[in-house]
Image 1 (cartoon, helix red, strand yellow):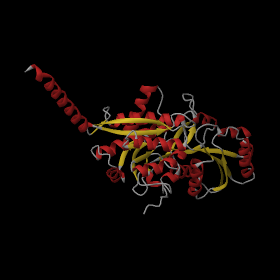
Image 2: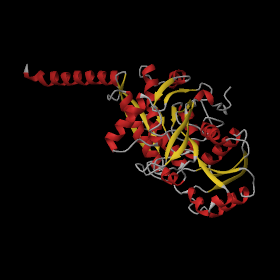
Image 3: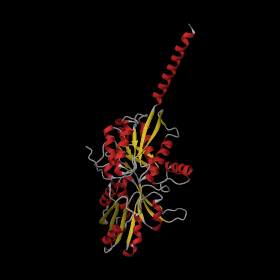
Image 4: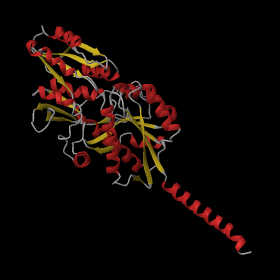
Length: 399
């Protein structure tokens, strides 16, 4: 009789253990973060840097535990390949099938614009990093969208600050999609003294810049005063080849913003060139940047790159918000928490502007120097342009 009850007792013991394990899981649980980015495609380098920074940032912000308030952070990776339709479907799958609580990404502005309505449909946060187009936090924005990356206006205002002087004529060379067109519009709006005389847009996959460069030269060569071509380009192709067309003969100079380290190899040919950048590892002086630089050198024997800092910043924003909510991922609570929220990043302190959820942040006016120790042109700091100095327009229609 006693032996006949053993299986029943064993079953009860197993059930008790299962209930106990379930209770522990319920208490700890998970916070699922989907990262939709260009793991492959034309912006692969940008996407991989963002992923590295996001992973390092989550580790740093949680003290190596990958836990917030007893909940484990789980990072789910999705490769949008730089394709808007794919990015949209991957984000929907992340929210619906993978049960992602929050999403980060993407690399491309075109993909981001396709993803924005998905966040609104599922009523879940999409933290945009590093897509730049103004329209993301402008006329295409919705309340579930936050952005740690800089926007086109921040780039434009900072770059204008570097070259905007009376008697200067500027022509722009940009890619023909949201990043390029929004960037040029913002740059044009930011100029107060210099005159924009021509806008040249080329396909994103352009490799031969001869025809575009000739149009730029024709517009600038006869003008008095200082003449500049402002290059706004992302991904493949080397627009700096236009310098081979002997721009100096016409008194034409090139200016541009920051870039990834490999992209700044071309800058070595332009010592003294001025512009403004979002990030360069040697510029910000703060504990978070020191930690990022040290960790990146330890892991990869190289300094962190342009978009690595952005991924790290996104992680800092997420963990700051989740700590404030005690791990609660309810979107309404997160929105309330994140609006106006300040957080530390490799660039220093940022905060999300309540009106459009754009992160307000410093930019850096640089002058290119050539240092034999580096295979790229080194952007030496001229001055930090603080967030409070930049009158970044609010371009959404929030009521």
